[in-house]
Image (cartoon, rainbow, N blue to C red; front, side, top):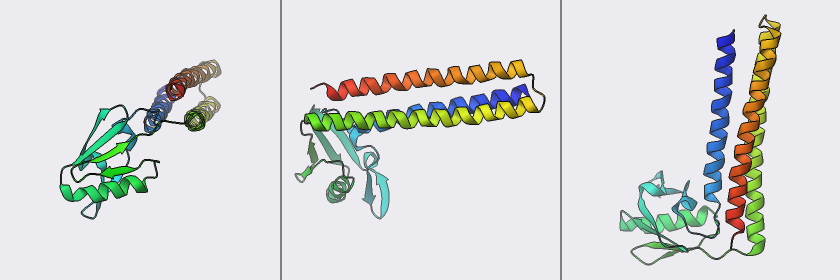
Length: 187
């Protein structure tokens, strides 16, 4: 019984780690006024009929803090790359010069900064909801095991362990979100 509870706790911890990783990946897509190739993560380009990640058909770089340059491996990919960026609806306008696709990142307005900070808080809340769902699953399993004969005091200790795990991950998320908000709000 104890080992099944431990494996349930390990599974719950892994789910929480995934939620934190997902949060970091989502926050990396929110631009904070600086150009980063991570802003284009998740963009799929039509590569001879197959959806392919942009990073696999082109070289991405940032020549300065306001520009992203995309150099495709094949010249005929300039059009599909440009189209994919438009279709991704990121609020970015690609410019094709025949060699590169360049994206100039416009400075953010105060309203847009606030909107992005709100969006990052929303992503943080999503991660916390995931933590609560994992906690609920783990606590239900512990209570079921206690009914089936697991010692009650040991069950209470495991429940405290679960709550401490959730509290730790919640603090981690709060730190990540507040750092991102600070980054967004810095002009």
